[in-house]
Image (cartoon, rainbow, N blue to C red; front, side):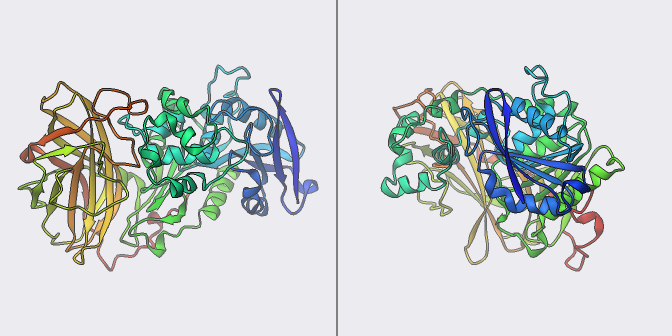
Length: 517
């Protein structure tokens, strides 16, 4: 049975569901798993039952100002102190043996992480007693971190959708933005971006603050001091994949990684090349890991884990997959045998931007540079972090640069491989070298596939349009076209290329499966 209590924390009552193992309190005390969520605690009752069935007391709480909890909803503002107070309350219960696993996905992953690395100078010393283990899936690490790429380019569609669904309200309306786009397909083209609430037809007083928030990187910055065991789960198609890897790489305690060919909803959101071998039961894996950590012995220090390679049945050891050395491939005249089809010069016009939701590439359009390789002569595994290096100039003082890599099979079907952004501020006409990170890759490119690289000035509506005037893209109301030029012979990509596994190799070797601690 689920029992609901309201925990008093700093003049607010936080609605909290508690589900004990079937044997009940008499058979306790138990280790606890704590999930703090803005998405409604009742949606986690199935998950809570699964934890309880495995011997944990499951504690699921609505964060301040959401669903059943009182107080004002201010994303990311109260989670360190509210989380610390909740952990203290749980440890004081007679059914708790004092051991706690903090767990969560997306925003809830942030809630779990700050109970470990939250501000130690907070009013109640929130870092004084961290949980015994933390599970962070596709972590959304802060307002500014989720609103912008590491380059500073604004993530428009994702943030507009999230704030329309969850911002400045006690509950959620997941389809709010889609409904408005149905009535007004040009909704996101209206300027300034800060006027979105008027277009949505409801008040969103926190919307301007999304773009004003400074990028603190607080969780990653404090991660080296953590000693709590970490299980980080992510997807190579998740917008926060780079944050998941940064968290795992910098964590000071034992850290384990599971990275699959998934989007933000993980196994419910498989990407291109996902195979049956990648349909991991993440719930069972997480519970088994938490049980092993709680019951001891302590996990070995250092980093370990598994990364799935899309298009194959294989899982690579995480250290091998993430740290594969990058090789530099010129986009013309190099080992990839690429050719510049068009775009030694091109126009980046924010009034007619290259769209993020279209994979068609017309060589007759003058809005991008387009490189295409000859068909690959053998299967090629790209496993690790990639980047593009451009020798480029713009005739405007401000410019964004997007690089999108697309795999085109012999039948002409296109699938996205990677996308990245960079922002430059240079005197007009200045040649410079622009490095564009492309994020983590883990996929096999089959023989016969062509790799198409598109270099553009916009990637809309996924990202806001740079107006090229030097104004902030969020508050700008005037747009200017920008003429771009590339030196093709000095434009390259850095890819981590691993030797392909043989087709007959055993995909079930224990060191290749995400079954640890």
